[in-house]
Image (cartoon, rainbow, N blue to C red; front, side):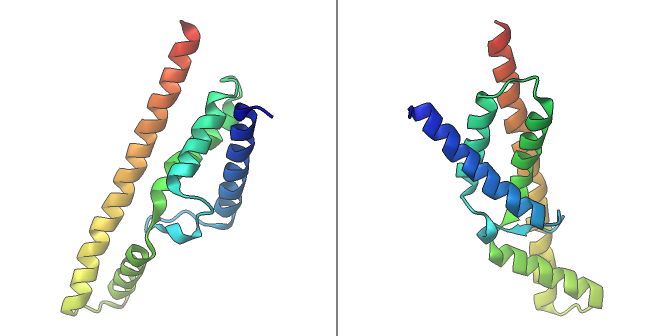
Length: 139
């Protein structure tokens, strides 16, 4: 078995495991627990790059799915961050505003901003990758 074939098989197993996880989770503006990921974010990104590098561009449905999965990685945050966001959300719902609550609310704002920024960065990364892949094929 060639190195490329081994790499493709590993990438497929990574993406399959990640896809199974995504199918069980609801998207959340407030983040998802990184501890649930079956592989590291870097391993998942590398697997997506590997598959995208080795499929035909005309298979748009797969390209779109992998692109969305890549962007969605920005939703995953540490369990501690997720706990802060959940506490802050509950505090806002219950209108509790003690000093520690306001600290959680402020931190939660930073965390949700970080999620948004991470997703935007992931979008830029994958768009750049796809544009380079397309430009290499046309030259």
